Length: 247
Image 1 (tube, rainbow, N blue to C red):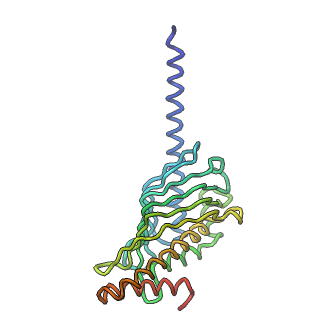
Image 2 (image 1 turned 60 degrees about the horizontal axis):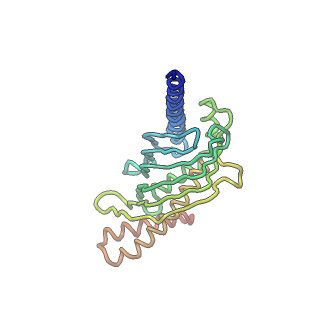
Image 3 (image 1 turned 180 degrees about the horizontal axis):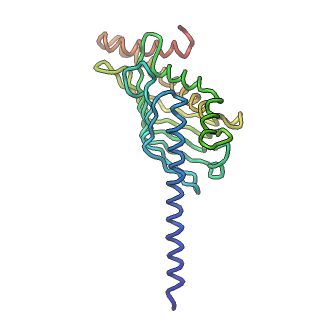
């Protein structure tokens, strides 16, 4: 029997695999380029992403090494760092105007909160995100050859094993965060902008940290030294004030 059909079949399989891997890295490079190009205009801070892989067939992918820098005026270099983000995108929406993410799972994120009486670095970051207008997003995307701003829907979002470090230096305290789950972000609106998505998620994350900080302050202040106790208490009071609108 001729070996030619087997050789042809083997060559086809190899080409398919090469094409699949190539497409995965190609789409991943688009995701990475988009985040590193547009995210700084939303956060008004430095943003770095080490890598991104996304399968155009299954929609599954992973983002690695997401670094969000601190807003101007704060001593630390970062507001938070996420080692790995798992995403499940509806494949048919990858190149559409409204991208549907069936799942976004964040594991072991590291947040850093600096406080100053009634202000905080995360408060400034939230203000930056909230203040980033749709007009700005449209101009940025148009400059990248995108005539229509992308919208997003997130069916399920989860954050687990997170930690928050209050302050910097010898009095800094690192505390575990409770799990956070959100559903159907942007669904009722038919999709929301990347800035609105970032603000929705970050505001919920901050609310989770408020509870963590308040509980820690209640336990730490009576039992620890004044420096550490005041660090936790001032952090909790500052974040509470920011979310409640108190000045």
